[in-house]
Amino acid sequence: MTTPPLIKMRGITKRFGTVLANDGADFSLHPGEIHAIVGENGAGKSTLMKILCGLYLPNDGEIYCRDEPVQINNPRTAIALGIGMVQQHFTLVPALTALENIVLAKEPRRFKALLDTATAHRSITALAEQLGFHLDLNAKVESLPIGAQQYAEILKALYHGAEILILDEPTAVLAPQEVTALFDCLRGLKAQGKSVILITHKLSEVMAIADTITVMRNGNSVASLASAETDATELSELMIGKRTFDDITRQKRHDKPSKPMLHLESLTLHAKNGRTLLDDIDLDVFAGEILGVAGVEGNGQNELIEVLTGLRKCDGGTITLNGESIANRSPAEIRRKQVVHLPADRHRHGISLDNRVDENLILGSHSQSPFCRHGLLKQKPAHKFADDVIEKYEIRAGGVDAPIRTLSGGNQQKVIVARELESDPELIIAAHPTRGLDINAAQCVHQQLIDARNRFKGILLISADLEELLSLSDRIAVMYNGQITGILQPSKTDEAQLGALMLGNSV
Image (cartoon, rainbow, N blue to C red; front, side, top):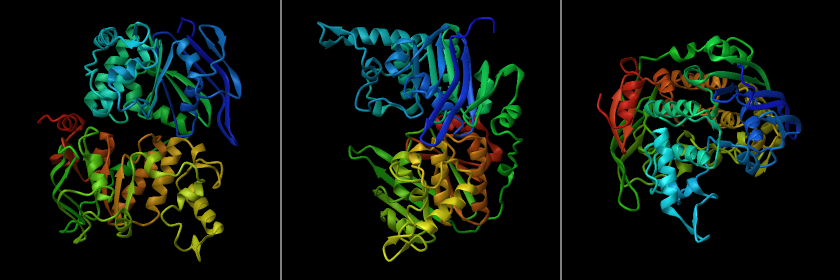
């Protein structure tokens, strides 16, 4: 490009204890550019961008903004420089309205005290119309679908003056039609002269939207390419330093037993206010089958998982596992039936952030042999198990005794997957198991699920990644408004048809 960079980061180094997250990384961003950053888990992508946003301080390196050296010591400094970030896990306040969230910390005031709601509403409505957003500003965030919450996050960043917008895994929870709308918005921002940085693992989306692509590996930037001069295969090789293969997703079983392993009949669940959350669900999962569940988040998938794992009691219907009722059993009882759960929210339900990697890997088995004797935890077998699992699942950690909070999000997810699958379960309830994982890590998880299915385990796969569902599933159930609206054969459908059903349309 002929225009000088808007942002230059040179020789950025960041350490967390003994873990080197960024190792002399470079990055440049130009005005009016959509710039994607790709790389494996732990490659340093999010860390580098959090340094740019003032969330982390670098140990070494320089940052230039509009050719002037700057020190970004906190998010307030970043905002003053026109840098805003929409993180993968949204930072909105659920009990406040969309409008209140957007103007938070920059509220227009009347008489220096009262919120000038009318002025705020006019300003945000005008901004939303420029971007083609349709958002109920008066609705509480907790009632908004995930796509609308993302719109609120983007509007918040722009309202606070962002000329550089950083999006971390923005399409992870969106339906295909919502992804299209988001990309239209990003192109609109580009047309206004704003710059966008996109952190993502989805190379097909990178090729569709990005002007420039920076590849990171082992904490460093290894290449920066124009999207017109590369392809997904080259990017994959640059990310991991070798050629990748995805043939594992094409292996399918065609034989299955006549009776289902998991049988749901007329399953019903109501909220405390009487609203129907699960509406007369009938569903079967067979041994030796991956049953995918597609749906825009907020249409009953989480409630279905909570009922199946004992976290919530159903109001009606039956749940049987191998002919035995497990409805309204406790989580411990259901786990003893060899049912495991890969939770969607790893921080809240999957790991203990204050514990070490080895301690997290034996959670659920820590009171059993060989990890426990006479009520005392045995360190040697726990360390041996953790060492073996770290190698098998290619978990990047600073040793088995490293605090798990120092691992990247993707490596934390690998710890959860490894722990649950290594327990040799009969039924696996997997909620977004590869969300936030890079190509290599996702393939590792996919291979484990395929292997489990081929050992005649039953798998219920809930995912927002339609490519993943179509590749892995033997059948796909679509959820909308707490109901199963259809069960499809992957070989006879595509992402567009699935997306239409997910949004309540007929195909």
